[in-house]
Length: 185
Image (cartoon, rainbow, N blue to C red; front, side):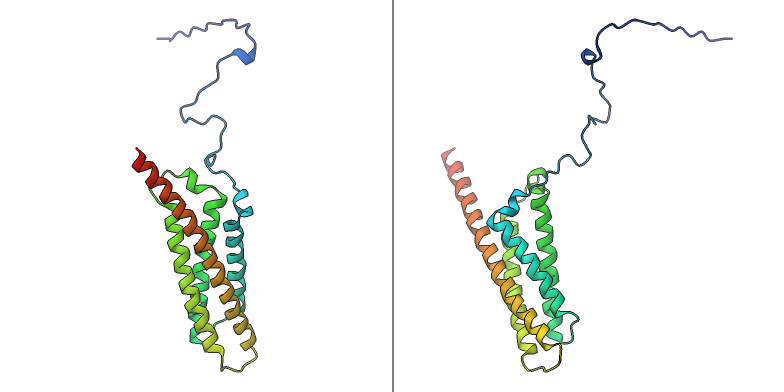
């Protein structure tokens, strides 16, 4: 038994631009897999964005000047500096890639960042006090770098306090807007 194949040829004289577009099953139509991410450089030109960059730079200085940890208090200082650096770096990527706007999750992003930054402020304050107290009476050649790390810890605690203040102002503005629209409805 042989199967028979029939070929039908039709002429389409229409120009290629008027032909219908091909739709694929995957929904991919010329967009990248990460098209939902948008680079947001404008945030880092604002005061909160500049403060985040300052926090990262001071964090790098704190970690570089305090390491390696020769005294037990420096271990705590480095732990706080490293954890704060990582959390700030995560928030930088959240703002840089516009993840807050892209993810439709029921998260109060501003309150979450406010609590995180407030906690970093408290921890940095405790850490620089411990760092300076541990190295106040210790006389070795690496004492100066550790004292400088404590001073940059003070500056970073102030930077985190400023970040907390601006986040509080932003959070307060969003909660009053939300409550006024809720009561008006």
